[in-house]
Length: 347
Image 1 (cartoon, one colour):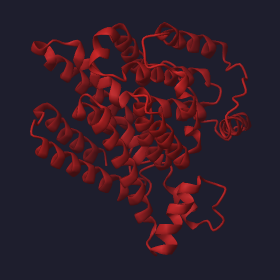
Image 2 (cartoon, rainbow, N blue to C red):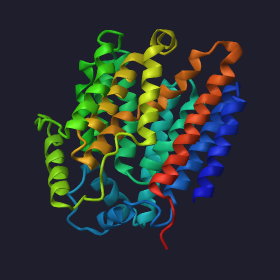
Image 3 (spheres, one colour):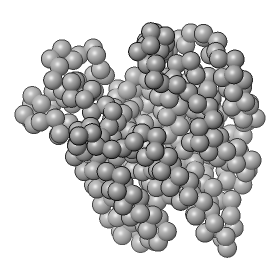
């Protein structure tokens, strides 16, 4: 599996650096890559990801309603009972929804199509389409909702926000996004969130604040009880892990050059502010590691669009340095993911 991931990364890298200009050719290549990624994720063998057996149990459970989102219940019954297909087709369906939702959102939003696909593949494809398949679908719709919010198309924002919640209840946090302005206004406050998060991390507290959002506080309580009971004793937060420090560095680089980047990307400031929130939540909920990781990755999906905007920092003559920098970040993400989650087939 590791060899396959490295091969796919190399393939996307060639497309990224070649940068096809012809629209028809770009569309054909994008669709082809989409199909390949769907098949790789949907046809994976058992044991590659940590949640495989969880979803296999969901597939076999008769009284599933109430234990997972209604979307999963409907799709499982459609595949299993209506079509009479096996479990692999459920994985294929979620892979299709997850990959196509994100790639479609990238095509609509991202200033650099293949740069964003490269960042997506190096981290979120592995994390979502292989493991967190429900949230994998949901985050694609989150990207759509943020984009339409930045464009002040509020009906479309709420539509896609509700679809994301339908696929994963933790996405209810998206309903708070209208409180974030797509402008440089208050950006300094967001830059201070990360130092504040580190302060709370060292104090080893998240202040025991109750979050009045349906489903979220219950999820926090559940994770907290599991952590305190020792059920999740192997999970812990390292605020100085390489992946997180790279993200913090990227955020501050983007902030420092925000005036230079924003004219080229209309939704830049709202995406950047949400990125700051993702980094803050990772530190803020350090006492509840699993929830901390989940929420950070949920909000952090905006980096798929944000990271390639580093290219705007360079003049046309030196654009190649920006492109190479984005590629290096993607490669680093990929290698760190392979190292951290140990993508090895369990025999």
